[in-house]
Image (tube, rainbow, N blue to C red; front, side, top):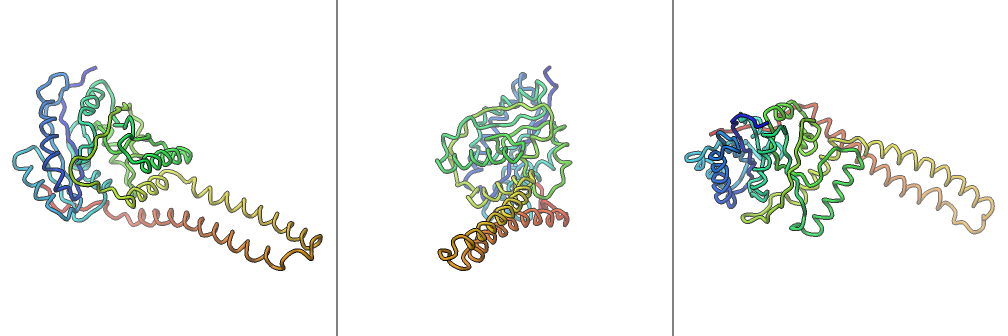
Length: 316
């Protein structure tokens, strides 16, 4: 069943994008303007919500200029809060019937937006953009991403492979998302758990035409660890299993030491089995388990303080 006319908000996080948005935002604006002229799409109006995530270049000045001749809402955060929090700031300030999130570089295929809107018209509350291939990625990035998604699934995390932050949400699904109050945000993991009718939209990701990616290896690793520890306690249980396993190994080693002492007394180096190997082996395992536990304790520490996930300095 085709729905009535609706309004669309497009949330775009921006961090040091002075080289990118002068080209991509007008292109996106022109693309969406065409939708308002087609009855089969059903869009009555749209608005671009550009969130400046503490940029150190002229990104905010460019957003300010856009707001003077486009339907643009500019949000300036007080500092850099990270991509996920910047996106949440834009989502929290949206009022449209439908909300689309997309990165400022427009590597996500704009034509997929058409399929997302059609999916919404026919009953989908969520339309998730999923890359059909990773042919444009380096071998390292392609293999590491594949390994990460497999690891997440092994640990019981409900995540959609090759889905990032290109998605369309109805007002109903957005309200459900905003009800989540955790500080450690991992939207890619939260959104599939909402449970409303969902449509998967496959698309080919384009090469970046302007500027450079802001997702460094360090940031990608941080996002990966945050996603894993935010949705699974399996690493903690794995630490427990390791402890039990090595305790059993310690008993076996004790019997082995006794055996060597009794039957091969003249051939064993005194003290090697009872000092060096257990210290190195168990010491490493203890540090590993403490690191895993510390990661979760750190998350608890951040959550119980209930600090704001973002602070808005200015809205235009």
